[in-house]
Image (cartoon, rainbow, N blue to C red; front, side, top):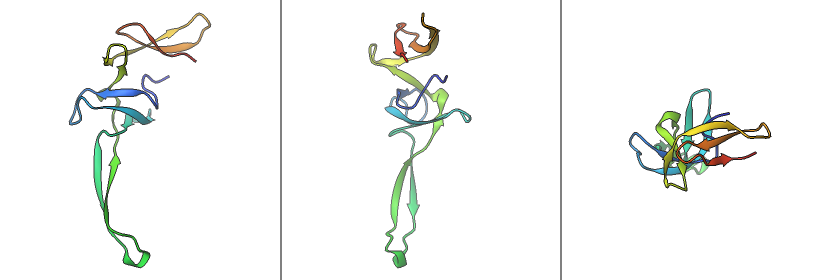
Length: 107
C-alpha cells in the first residue's frame, strides 16, 4: 500500500513548483514518481505537416516529480501532512494523517 495514491490532493514541498497544490493523476511506484495536475509542466514544440493538415503547435504536458517532493494535503489543518498506516478492528489497513490522527480512507 502506497502512502500517496491516484486522486489524492497533494502539495509540492520543494522544487520550482513549491507551494502548488494539485490532484495526483498517476503514480509510478517502481520509479517512485507521481504526476500531479498543473505541476512540472513541460512545453514541447511539434512540427506541422501540411500534407496531413496538421498545424505546428506548442503542447504542454505534465511531467512526473519524485514522490519525496510532495506531501498529502490535510483539509482539516489546511497544511501538508505525513501519512502513516494503521489496522482497524476489522483487520483492514488504512492510511491516516500523522498530524491529527484522522483516517484518510476507509475501505
